Length: 399
Image (cartoon, rainbow, N blue to C red):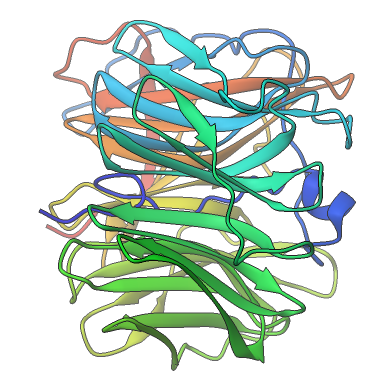
C-alpha cells in the first residue's frame, strides 16, 4: 500500500498565508485566507453521471482562522492543521483538529499550552503516529507528534534558529520534513536511529514531500527562478532534472509508487499573474502537462490510489468558488463549487482523498478581510450527500 504525507497522499500544502511574508521565509508568497460566515450551501442539481456532490462546511475555528493542510486515514479519521488569529504575527496560535465522520474536534499541544506556532503541514504514518510541522514564535521550527489522542511539541537539536519547515511526510519507521536553511534546501529525517538534518549544496527551498512504504520519495520546491525536484535514493536525497520553466515553482507532490507522481505549483509572470503548473512523472522523466485554466494558483495535490489525482487551489477569475482539478496524465478536469451570493475569496490550500470522499481545506476571506476556515467535501453523485452538485469542465480524466 502506498502511503504519503496524507496517507494515501500527503505532500505539502503550503498555507501561503501571511506568515511567509512576515517571516521572510517566502520570497514570493501568494495571498491569504478566510471569512466570517459559513460558506453558503448550493442547491442540489443533478448534472449527469459524471457529477459530484459538493458540501461546504467549516471546522469553526476561532477568530481569523485558516486550515493549511489535511490528511485522511479513513472517511471517519481525518486530521487538519492551521492557525487562528492569522493577522497577529506574534500571537497567532496553531490548530490541530480531527474529523470523526460527524464532528470536528480541536486538540491542544500538551507541552505547549499556548500553541504558539504556525502549522503548515500534517502527515500520518499510522492512526497512532501523526506529525505536523511549521514554525514557532521562538524562531525555531515547530515539530509536533501525536498518537491520535494527545500531541506534544518535539525538541529537535539538529534544527536551529532560522531553519524553516514547510512540508512533512511520514510512513512507518520514517518521517521527513523539508524546508530551507540559509537559502539552501533542508531535509530533516526522523527514524528509530534518531534525527538528521541535511542542508543541500545548491540554493533553493522545498515546500512539499511524499514518501512510500518501499522507500521511494520526492521533494519539490524552487531555486528562486525555476522548479526544483529532489528524489530519495536509499537514504540520500539528490536533485533530479526538472522541466525548465522560467519563473516556475512547485508547492506539493503526491506519488503512487515509483512510476507515477504529480507535482503542482505555478509560474510567475512579470505582470504579477500566476499560471498553474502541473508536472507528471512516468518512471523515467518529469514533464509539464496542460491544464484547463490560463491563470490559477495550485497549492495541494493528492492521489486516490488508482492513478488519479486531485489538486486544490484558487482561481482569480472566480475568486469566490471552490477550485479543484482532477485527472491523470495529460487529461485534467476542472471542478468548481457554488457561486457565492456575497463577495469573498476562497483558497483551498490542501486536499486529501479517502474512499469516495475528496476533502479540501483552506479559508475564505470576506469583504472586511475576515478569515474563516473552509472545508469542501466532494463525493460521487451516487453517494449519499447533502450538498449541491459541483460544476465540472475540461477534458475527461484518462482511465
